[in-house]
Amino acid sequence: MKKISIRKMALLLAVNFFIGSATIAQTSYESHSMNISLKGTSTLHDWEMKAATGTSEAQFTVGTDGRITSLTKLSFTLPAVSLKSGHTAMDKNTYKALKAGDNPNISFVLTSATVDSKGSNNYLLNCIGTMSIAGTTKQTDLVATALYNPADKSFTVTGVKKMKMTDYNVKPPTVMLGTIKTGNDISIAYHLKFSR
Picture 1 (cartoon, rainbow, N blue to C red):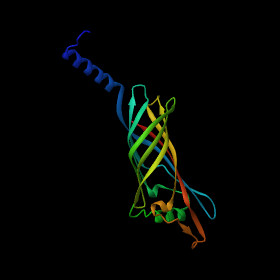
Picture 2 (tube, rainbow, N blue to C red; picture 1 turned 135 degrees about the vertical axis):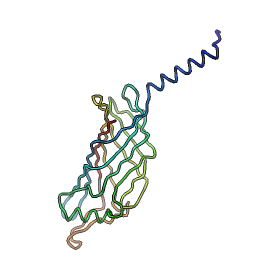
Picture 3 (tube, rainbow, N blue to C red; picture 1 turned 180 degrees about the vertical axis):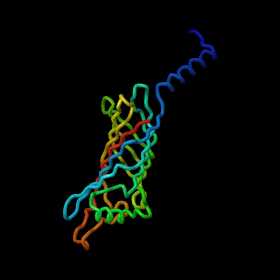
Picture 4 (cartoon, rainbow, N blue to C red; picture 1 turned 30 degrees about the vertical axis):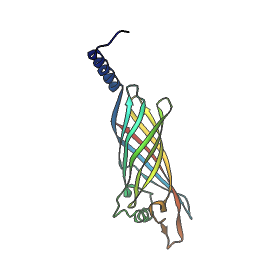
């Protein structure tokens, strides 16, 4: 068996290291497009509030082929008063319930995530992190779909999170002296586009 010198072995290891580094890189992205929809029910009718203002950052480990291998960072911040229903009275009641004066932002910070490929440029993200709403912070999960867009090397992330208002010590708002009550169950749908 032919012996390999220490110098040659070190050179081979260095080459393999640089090749590996070239094929996988952690890349930071920011969301330049955000659409949030908050939906719920009431004794009168279903309701919806929308927001397009906020900030979000993500860090994906991406190969040169554009495939995601991991998600190492994800955070978003949404000003509570950016949620609008089109009805001033409802908006005011919502901001009051969210204690927006003392806690102006709804936020999420990732602690861990797994990435599973669902096919060409399509991925399932299973995220665990802390969410803060109305001054209460809790650990929660977020499940999202990430679609890689080769044309501009961006990612579109979408998903829906269902929860109860009381999970975050939010009292479901009422109007008309309590004759109209909102339901405790809500869903937050999100659509974010991340680019470098």
